[in-house]
Image (cartoon, rainbow, N blue to C red; front, side, top):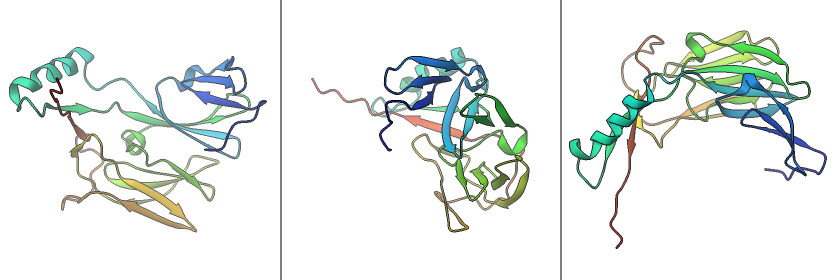
Length: 196
């Protein structure tokens, strides 16, 4: 990442900050719960997390039960990532330019958002999708089903270079892509060690 100059600004957690002083310049309420940010040609492309799919109390209860259900040294529980939507924001004014919701943007896989060649690319559990960066209109989609039960530390890799789109991931199921199938279930693990 390039160093920011003294008069530059950047967006973090819904705030536009002065890079030199750390002072808040503006607050972008529409970018609350941002999970990923890409910047290209004066536009911020955001993956926004929506409301959690289950109450936090239920998630905590599942996590607390993990030691009883699984081996003490490898607690495991399942977690659902919040549903997502895509947003394009003018970096200068903070104005929302485009807002993409619906089936194809509901479960954007982590770290798969790419902006290149006037297009926005991302991967969901069923497809790799290309949108026009200016209009937000879908240009194409390619079937690319993924494993819907996966370790929390894994995510597909999406790379775009010289007009070629590459998607790399762990072994995919044999079943056809299905946008309406249940969301990805992440297996969260932790290794408890007694170092004392």
